[in-house]
Amino acid sequence: MSTTLEFALQRAEQVRAVIADLPILSAAPRARLTVSVGVALLPPHGKGVIAILNAADAAMYQAKAEGRNCVRLAQSA
Image 1 (tube, rainbow, N blue to C red):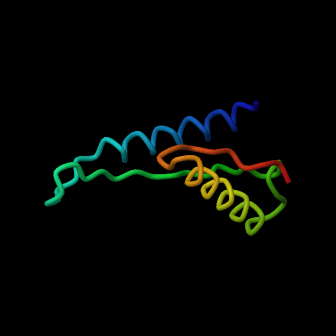
Image 2 (image 1 turned 45 degrees about the vertical axis):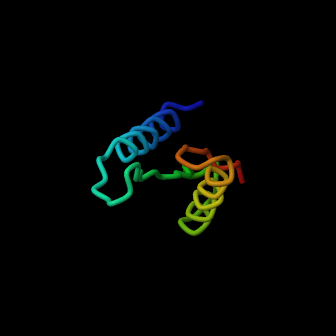
Image 3 (image 1 turned 90 degrees about the vertical axis):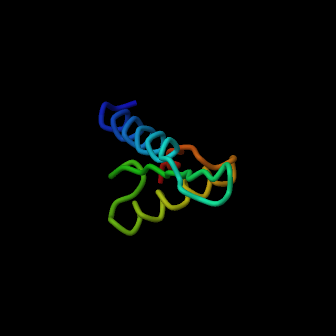
């Protein structure tokens, strides 16, 4: 795994964790905010902006399907 990819995954996980720890003011006693993140890099996951966005979007939906509140790496193009 490249340093750039490791950095991207670490940063995405940091963002996910910070959002999960945010206090939510709500009438619901246990309201929580979570985020599902898809990570994609150029070029392994595509050769242009649209391809990268599509790869990240697919990875985000994979994260949602696997229980939400997690980070997933896009599949290689």
